[in-house]
Length: 268
Image 1 (tube, helix red, strand yellow):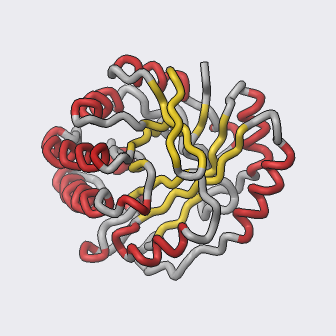
Image 2 (cartoon, rainbow, N blue to C red):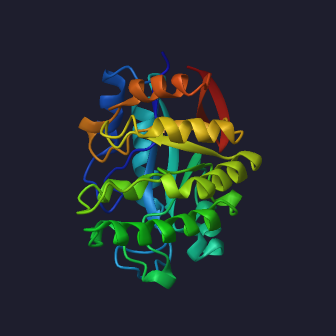
């Protein structure tokens, strides 16, 4: 079994204190073959302010140190999670040109600027109406992002806002009403040669992915990566094998890994 974690964060992300050396050591101890570090670069901050760019120096320094330390034992890939690219596509392209990247996750973490730009984490998602208003805006942003095909390799955690909606008082909140948007999103990504990820949310989100994967496959999707969204070394690899089982259940025969932004297909 070929295990690879393609969504991880280190101290070069605003929300992690982990060292890449520690995450790589954990990956090796668990028998992973590949680890892709994908620190955050969001074009909006937590409260909707514009971000001017990215300082690549600490990311590249940390990566070079870890790559040398684990050479021949673990394939370490350099990635980035680029959030909110539709806010400023030219800035997004300039940031991506700043490093020899292997992999880019395209994500949406915030409301659109027209809706205030707040990070979903800070929103009062206490009732279903508020949740669906957020999801309306979220899918509108994703449908803008999917067109910017040079700014991502896979669409990140497409069910992401649901993480913050379990407490809705008159829920449950589901994606049932967004099947047309999901179908349009997946068809556009597949036709552009782009993919999606199964994001296990550190092993906490698994079964929810099966209908998403089945729809993506029905839309012609083939490229799927698997990642944990780990922000600590202890969370590296959590749920990876279970996610692979879901891929097989949905009819996929391969998972994707990347080198210099070119997908390589590994049999499940």
